[in-house]
Image (cartoon, rainbow, N blue to C red; front, side, top):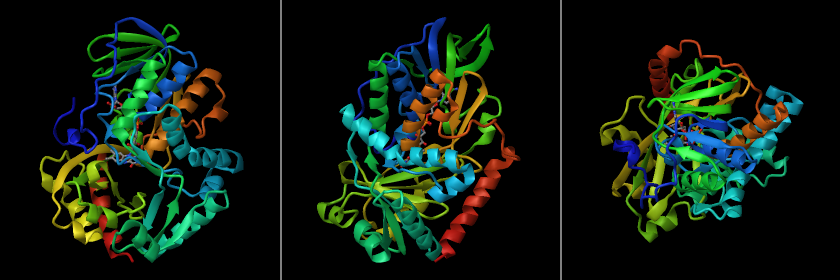
Length: 428
Ligand SMILES: Cc1cc2nc3c(=O)[nH]c(=O)nc-3n(C[C@H](O)[C@H](O)[C@H](O)COP(=O)(O)OP(=O)(O)OC[C@H]3O[C@@H](n4cnc5c(N)ncnc54)[C@H](O)[C@@H]3O)c2cc1C
């Protein structure tokens, strides 16, 4: 189990029952091996097992210990880009497939929770993107308009409407996407694992994969503790935690830390003034601030954090400052929980899917929106693995292309974050 600040998330109480995970036995043979037991690995495992494949999932940590169990639990449909941009970028046919796929992602999550009666606290009350500048207000208007023409009852919000729906100070407008909502992310990830196991998948926790090689027509995965598994196909679902397993993969990603804080439980009086209809919010800043109400009546707020591993509460001070700016009434409320996890950005802000060799599939790069995205993408990767029909994967299969000067990313990202924070602050 992880220790320190990663283990102190607001989602971890009360502790979850252990999963019926199964230690790897050396020499196992399966149809599909999956490296990574987050939302991507587990949604792939569930779908593959239900399609009749034998499946082995291997995770270096425990299920839910990484991004999938630590995130803000905001279910956000759509990608960073608007539908019209996606059509222009990908062309009519692929673009339409990407827009349709991205539009379905909140349905994927909430339908699964309802259909399978998952023990996951959730609320489908919509996602608000709050605008911090006049330019962002214009984008919000355009974004709401584009989704409206596609049949979504998206709503542009004035400054007064954002203030009424959020109780937050200082936003100039925004838009409401009714498809979105909130889940308890650790419960969701653990329930996905339980479903995958019930469907027949085997999950080994605390099992790091050290190498993936093609030998005599099969894939052989060796673990750090010297065991191996043979598979007809492999899905690499390591996302922001990618190490050197697949050459070049980690260098295609900019891994950032996202930090979060949770207040002590709030009084009913305070709770009634904050997000009274239960929406979740991300704002339009380059260095995004996101917030929602969480378990036990706590207020949760997150945003980018330092690249260094945080060791003291002051590493979260910028988030406490942001919380007080948005909600001055929370100034005296203690912060009881601080935690962080890793998100993967790509250079083009789009998710990447690779197939470096036939039967070896890799997907990564959620730009902090992986709850819906990875829930939807896993089944598509499995369908492609079974049918070999590339049309089933919404995104094009691209070569692994490392970002130039990746070795200097920490210096670059640190400087960029400081610069963008300044621009966000000055902009109106
Ligand atoms: C603090 C935070 C807040 C976020 N908020 C939101 C939000 O509100 N909404 C949203 O949509 N998204 C959010 N995200 C992003 C979202 O959590 C991720 O995009 C999503 O969980 C990625 O899922 P995944 O399965 O691809 O990766 P992960 O959940 O990161 O899983 C990858 C797994 O791979 C394993 N692994 C890595 N290397 C190896 C190896 N060699 N061998 C075996 N196992 C290995 C790791 O142990 C890990 O469990 C947030 C992320 C963070 C960190």
